Length: 467
Image (tube, rainbow, N blue to C red; front, top):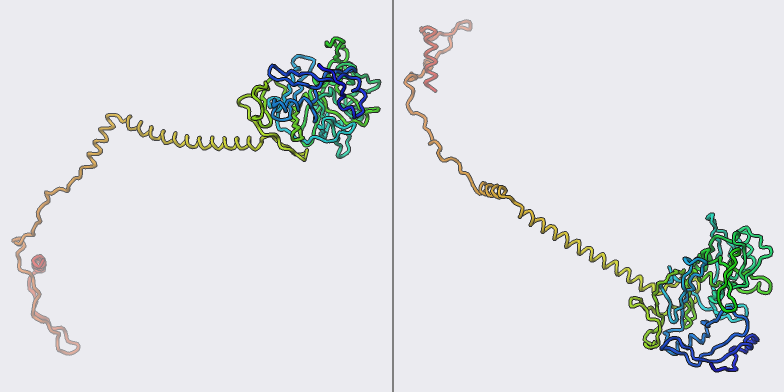
């Protein structure tokens, strides 16, 4: 490394930088990618860890972009889990030029990067509005730590380099009251989680914490990422055995000269969320986190501008390549990456499934009816065929009326000799009334001197003859 007398940002009056050593060197990313004349600083003052800048003027991000190793000045970060037990430990990941969709859960919320660079402001410009901070106690209750007055919200800075949650003193006091701690002679850690609040192990908080970020993102921090053993590093850089009788709460109470500093959402917040920063569009996005070892790298930007031999991470062949997330002037707007495309694909897929299902049902129904008719024809027995033949023969036979009718009969022209008598005729002699006096009697005509029985027999014979 070649030393250099130039001190970055010396005009800011930071005398601490003048004590450090600055120079340039070749930064080998891998076997195919190297950043020549890359500025390197060696800190001579107390420092807990080495750092690579990823903020607005990041030299590292700009060098990769100019080398066409990444398609955009963007990056995604999952800090992973750092619990005391192996089951609560998950490796983090940093994606340059995109993000890891496998580490996200649910919808994302997009915010503009703040341009305020004044002292005490958020150095990276990742400012959000906190609507509520609540404890999730074992008894099921969720007391709020914010003041009860209406409209109690506050701004906070999302800072991946900060290992704690930095909250106002009033909120920390609300935490002590909700967990039945006095807070007298509160000790702070001087180890890896510097300035974290120390508690006796048996008195340490055993619940979770939920931080609600406007407009509707709830980040629940599990207890195993909020309460940790008090780790520290020795002079050789190795992790020392922590004191088993103490636990550190990853919260720093702002008091004294730092009482007016902006609250900070550091590593505990990011252990349950995913952060994506797009410097090209001056915006960043937050998701609920999904701590997993799986990967689904989504590049952001024009992938055609990347050189194929720079050794960047190759995304899965099935991963979509969305355009950069649209910039948002309103931090309260929920902006999902590629939501319209996803909705269109889902609607189109459902419509196609319905159409194919209807066609298949119609074909299946017709095919089934055809097979049923064929099956009935094939299953006719010999007896049924004979019955059908006889039925057909019967229907084709048309019976005739009998032709052996009797010829018409004539009545006999001869009279019965037994009844050949002369018809009886009335007497033709007229009978006249008597012309005598009024008191005279009727004139009697000729009388029939036959016996009564003979007269009746003759009358009957006459009637029969007339018939």
